[in-house]
Image 1 (tube, rainbow, N blue to C red):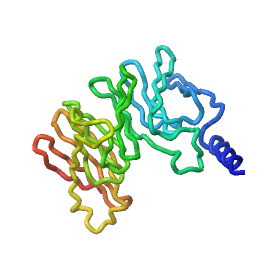
Image 2: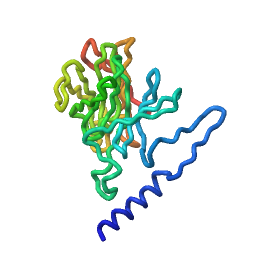
Image 3: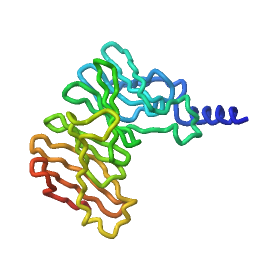
Image 4: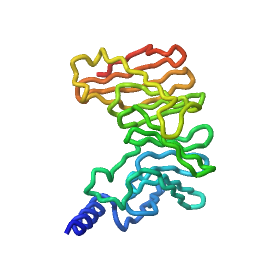
Length: 235
């Protein structure tokens, strides 16, 4: 009976979320590309000179699509739940919100389970960096190729010295707490980081923080001075 329950749950999930037998649509401006397998659930996306890169949150793969050749490639991400695991299990869902390409043509992506991954195209290998950010969500590179990122449930900016980062560890990562005086009296559980942007021309980092339906702020961090130089209150 338990096996039947899992099979029924899988079928219901696929019917509701996976769009079985999808037919691509197109117009004069937009072409829809159907991914190779049902229920890939791509979230983050990035583009290099030849390919579109995405993370399949449900299948647990890093995928690429070459539009010139109309070809897909997929690389299994280690330690990532896949479609084969029961949908009734909480462990079967894992989100990746952001994909980025660095100056060395490596593919980076966030993992909501407190990690950031790097994929080396030449060796087709993955590095996993454990990070102190809670639900890593957005990241950007500075002009030196180092990384700044945030977590949805963190009230900090995190800096990664890429040359010092090591697979399977948190080495090379520094936390820069946001100044939360403007959120005094607000329950920290409703506060979340939004997006992060690195201004390489001015060598600044901007990050948003909000308490839903209560308050929002933008923070400007000066990389050279190693301090916050501006806080903007949002209406």
